[in-house]
Image (cartoon, rainbow, N blue to C red; front, side, top):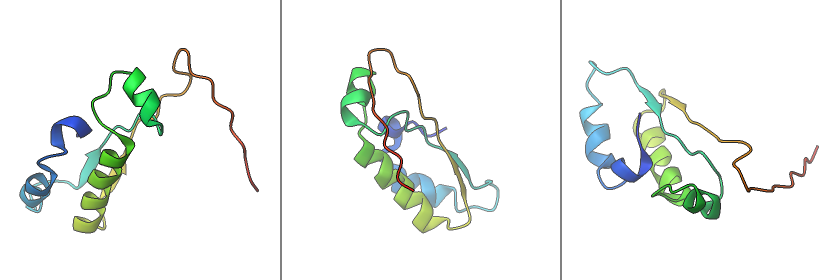
Length: 86
């Protein structure tokens, strides 16, 4: 699992190591919230933009990779109004 705040500064080096055929190209990169304010409230030490940058580097380097994430729904104290557009 890639914790965004731990790999943000070294993602370029990590993907270079993972170019080896000895690694399966599966990346678990938790987002947990699409809101920087909520991430801060949750005590997360990364931003949505940092997460996006990491995912972009992985996608550009390994176009055939699998990326998984976590999204927390119903974080205590969070009120969200969702609008669905068809």
